[in-house]
Length: 192
Image 1 (cartoon, rainbow, N blue to C red):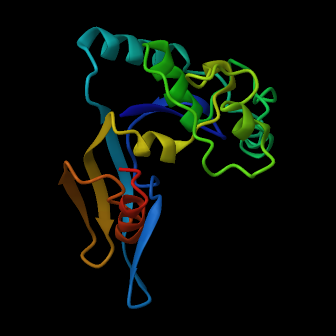
Image 2 (image 1 turned 120 degrees about the horizontal axis):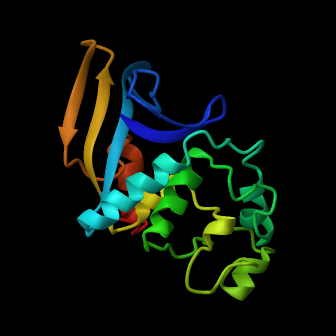
């Protein structure tokens, strides 16, 4: 089971269920398999940090999902802080980044795909953030930024093979294992 946040329920703790299909593999025009989930692990997480991480996430159970995650677009488009979302609201990805920040794991800014007119590109960081790292109050990073971070390793992926109707467990797959063509693209871009 895991703790995450959904639009319908806010922050909850629940068992992994088959609804967590997130991507497709297509072969000869047919859907062959879908990845249910990938589990990433921070390589240098100490036991006390792990306990504090779980405790922090459990303390957020019952808190709401933001009314909109478009606040993050203020950062990606213009370099402005995500002032739309309240500090006690969590999207699925903001919960992860805020929880990791809580135990001392901070993240660099990812502005490489922002438009040329984004203020953060010129400053080296969005307004409301330090130059060194993302400020958890205005978290704007998403899942792909966590996957790109070399400190995290994919330890397991669960895939539903629609052809055989069986769940495949792949231990220690390479990152981006959910989409082979994207894995090649990302490696060529030196993100892994």
